[in-house]
Amino acid sequence: MESYQTLLNKGTLALIHRHPLFTNMTDSEIVEYLSTVKPGVIEMEPSQRITVEPGFKRRLGVVIEGVVRVLTVDYGGNKTIINVLQDHGNVGTMQFMADHYNMLFEIVADTASRVIMFDADDFLKPITGIERIQYTVLVNLMVSQRQLFITLSEHLVCLSQKNIRDKLLHYLQIRSEKAHSYEFDIPLSREDLAAYLAVDRASLSRSLGELRREGILEFRKNHFKILSTQHFQY
Image 1 (cartoon, rainbow, N blue to C red):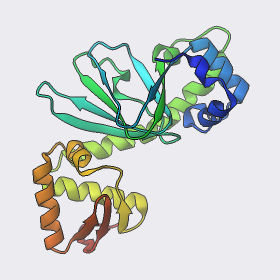
Image 2: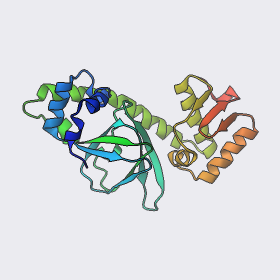
Image 3: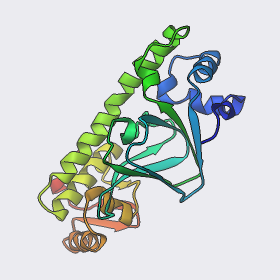
Image 4: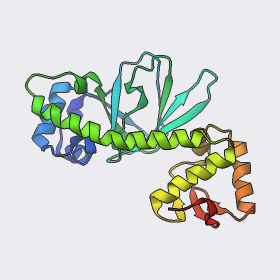
């Protein structure tokens, strides 16, 4: 990991400043906070993968530039997408913040990305001299967790559906509601969508084909158009 000092230039501070974790903070407060807690910085090239081994120290990852995916990897090597994180979106809490010592994670960069890696204890233990700044960061963290919980809940509901067709329909309904439209793009490739729904890609393709033949939806790559609104109300 790179040193936190790479974050202290004017251009990078502008990226940091727009992130929800640093709401209502001045540049000087951000610099003071970073200089005190000294987080690491991960810079990733497009398609670069980083494996997080079990036992990795608890961390909180904040994406300040680019788009990254967080996946879990089971003992058989099967991967499930947990979240897609992007700059100035949700706080970007990567799942290995908690003590998942028996879980293997993988971070994949979709674009050139930068992620600030904080020690989780920096948010939980008072630090002498920056208590007021630390309080602001902690409040921002708590507020922004709402979106993370919503995202995880949506994922769990998708996974709880009985079959691939229902998983897919529920996911597309969520995307339709977010777009407030029956025509929308999804942020996942076919391979990623299969991983997100915990199904194999061939079965996913068959379900998509069936829905197209039945006149329920039309799609091209990651662009979808709902033709039958029976299952989709926003």
